[in-house]
Every structure is written in C-alpha cells, then in structure tokens.
Length: 286
Image 1 (cartoon, rainbow, N blue to C red):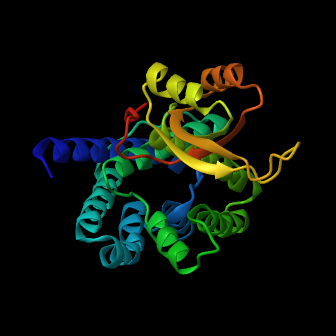
Image 2 (image 1 turned 30 degrees about the horizontal axis):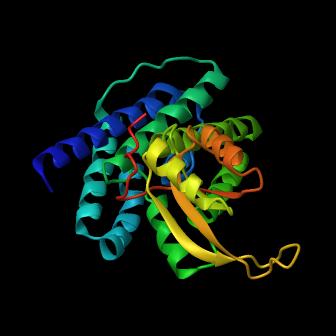
C-alpha cells in the first residue's frame, strides 16, 4: 500500500474508535443499554457479571479474529486486531462525558455514534465487531442465507437475552440503539449517493444511449435481447438492452428523460453496494 493510503486508513480507524467509544461511554453504559453483535454480548455480560467491558470486547472478539486470519488474510486480521485493541484501550483509559440522562436521546445518539464508528473503521479496512466476520463466513457455507440474515438472527438472540436480564424497557431501548447504529453504518458505507443499477429495454435504445453517455457522462453496456412476449407478432423481436449505473440522486431525472424519449420503455432498478472502474465517480465520505 502507498503511504497516503495507510495514513488515510488509520485515520479512519482511529476516528471510528473514538466515535464508538463516545457512543458507549458517553451514552449507553450509564443507562445499561446494549448494542448488537459482539459489542452487545460484551455489554450484557459486563452488566450481569461486572467484568470490565474493555476486557470483554477484546477477548470475545479473539475467536472471530482467528477466523478472519484464516479466511480473509493476515492484513485484515492485523488491522482489525489493532482496531479492537484500540477500542478496548479507549474504553479503559479515555474519559468521555456522560452526555444526557434522557433515555430516548441516549438510545438514538448512542447508536448513531457506534454505527459511525463501525462504519469509519470498515472504510479503513478493519472491523470493531467480529460479528460481521462470522456472518460473512457462515453465508459462504450456507448459500441460502445472506450476511444480513445471519446478523439479524444473531442479534435477535442477544436482545431476547437482554429482555430477560435487563428488563423490557432496557431491551426495547437497546433495539432502538441497534437500529440507529445500523442506519448510520449504512449511511457511512453507502452515503447519500448510493449506487443504483438501471436496465432499460426500449426500441429507441440509441437516443437513450446518447443521453446517458453524453449528458450524464456515464458508461453503458449494451447487449442483445429478444422480446419474449409481444403483441402483433412481436415475439422474438430483437432489441437492445442498456445497462448503466448512477447514483440515486440522479435516478429521478434520468427516468424522466428516458420516458420522454420512449414512454413505453421498460426500466428495472437494482441497488448496488459498490463499483470499481468504468465512467463512474467514486462515492465521497458523507
């Protein structure tokens, strides 16, 4: 890696550690609310047994880091180990103000800070919670399940346990914390300009191609297709299919202009997690 890339990655990881530390010590710990994942398990065990949270976060993550070392490479495992160790040290030694006693504000903003911290660390190529590692590896083994499904099941078990040990109110506020963290994580990783893949099937493919390439300065892929069902004997009628990728801020204007060219155009949209290469600007950090 280039030196600038290393500096950028570790800047993001350090900011992520500080943000997660603020969410935990500045909001959640004083109210006995928990988050999801390994962090949530650590917080729950700390609340039940009185074990320091900093120790639990580090040691409970070790098995997941070993899995990451075997499956995802030494660079990722080393970065993540240092990031989690940094978070543990941050929780053990760095003072944070107890921002508010309001339970709703605590749950919402605690989740936002934790989600931002996890997202920033992931932008830097590390994780602060080993749940994501386990979910990725399990999804590879069980092809039916997605990563999000595995994380959801994992967190349902955690919050069910919180319902028993912490009580109904704390468990419900903890779920709110988790939802806030998940939304902030998605925002950090995808930003406001989340990519969308667009497939356009139209008899007026050439004007649409010109619109996308010349007006939007986007690359397109054109492949040949046939009409599988059509009126007036148009079955198996050849036509071009156009595929491009744009940000969701550009989608409404693009759809409008396509339909002005061909009101009968068939348009399909699909969310895209990320892209590499092509005539597509990289997403900024929002």
